[in-house]
Length: 536
Image 1 (cartoon, rainbow, N blue to C red):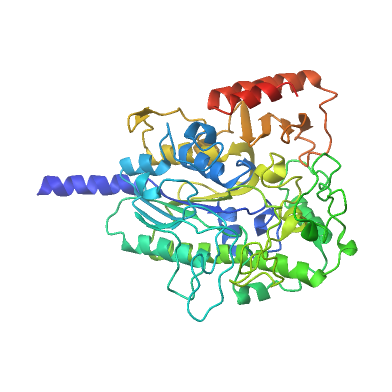
Image 2: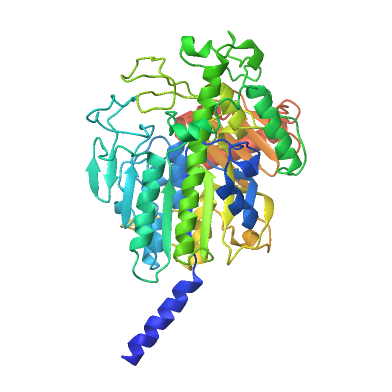
């Protein structure tokens, strides 16, 4: 009996030395949408985490939801994990949940999975959430008695509670709201833990991804505060970023989204014409009408971000109650940059209802002008490999293990999260899993820089999503839109990507494009397309 008790005490001590891990992922949130990255939106909980830990100025994802999630979960490029071209089933990889569960961690997930499999089949003990994307935040299922039909764009959506699948999922609770309910389940998992084992909790919020839907009391906080327009909002955010020295050196704000660099905005004509000229360039605020409608759109979006922060606050309160806050690593980031897509529907798919954004029966986006503001100071949007599509705010806080680090300028990627967590957990990464070979890590552990010991050392990072492509080596970045020539930027002086140097440095373009093509073949990007486009 004494021997058993002694071994239990040793196990408990070992568990106490390993941190709990909470990974919080926002959906389609822009670079400047939280206070510690320049926003006017109230995010006191995230700002506090940043002040007590570290925030990164050059942290990258992929340009799209599901490949970013694949890289986060596997530490690989999404193509290597079978998720490069569409949200399918993981192959030749192991998830962070599978590795940490084998290392005696509890593993729980809430929110957006975005793949064909279920989280409980890939290492998570418990799960509640959406398996695909763009669902109604108030009711993702069928109309409930006494309520209007919930607006949708496509469906029905696949949801799951642990291993039970719902197509569609119609919540019984009339107060269901995705951000709140995800947190409810996360708090339940934390409360129900009976042992001393460390845990991994992955909280993948679906906000602020469209449709624009939020609680009226949250919308009211921001209503009318954006009547100065997107130009002034962008300038104010850029000024705050410069004042807080978010970047190693100041640089000009990118211009409004425009076609001057071969990137015209596209969308349904009646909606696009409300904010763009005939070439697809965003108009100045003073040249558009319906200012009150535009103020409502961004007010709902701000309310969605605000509600995410409120729910992060709920998680922090629970950690304090459980006396686990000091030894919990919290990581926050977004899955890609802000979305410039134009999606406007009423209660029936395709019905361009004028019902304003906010309630369950409306389905709207905030469109490219406000996406520009979200991505301040960068150029481009989600789906592209410009900085506006792939740069994310990233906050790391672990009171016991990370002293306040301020702003870190190391170049990092979402695939670095898995090796970082595995190092802290003392977990072993396998060479094979489920009778398949497993690709070696592509990501790099960030433990050393989080503890102030040394910077990240890496050669290059690559991107590809549906023919959008990029490679970064040092401060040099080569990037292109589908079927367009390569563009070359010096991010050390031109993070807004406004001065294309491809014609002045052809040898560098050749070198980086060759590296990209070699990488693309290695990780499994469509080879015929790579061969045809490498010369451009």
